[in-house]
Amino acid sequence: MKVLMVCLGNICRSPLAEGILQQKINNLSLGWEVDSAGTSSLHAGEKPDIRSIQVAKTNGIDISNQRSRPFRGWDFETFDWIYVMDSSNYRDVIAMAQSEKEKAKVKLIMNELVPGKNIAVPDPYYGEFGFENVYKMLDQACDKIVGLN
Ligand code: 4NP
Image 1: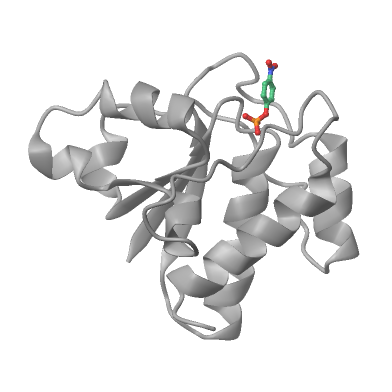
Image 2: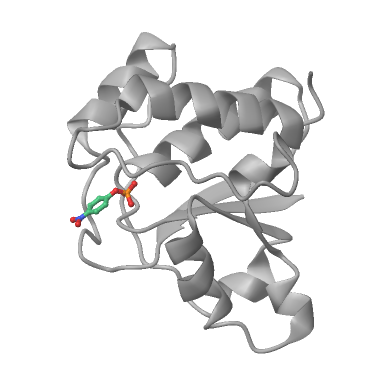
């Protein structure tokens, strides 16, 4: 299984989602691949936001080696599932799909935990929604993705 996590900047939410899922893949010896990308290239080449690095570290995960990269059309070919964080990411990724098959790969990540409710993982960049809350949401969603809980 190849999974891609997508947010806007690929510096706050999707790097955390990648790190969390990678840890579960390792713990369960699943042999899956996980990567992350942003719908914007604004932060391309940058490390994750220090606040994401910190909350991951607190939870025993090192995401400091990740670098932001933009989502590209060929990611539809590489990945089996493309998990987006909010409806704006969903629109941006779907707009790049070239077939119904590609569109069907794109899912809101919180729908894994609460099916059909289209709950967003809020953008924590400006600080109103805490990074610890983002971590908890993604940790629960990733448990579902790997079949735990
Ligand atoms: P992310 O958060 O999409 O979770 O990586 C953001 C990072 C940067 C910006 C917005 C959201 N920005 O506007 O620069």
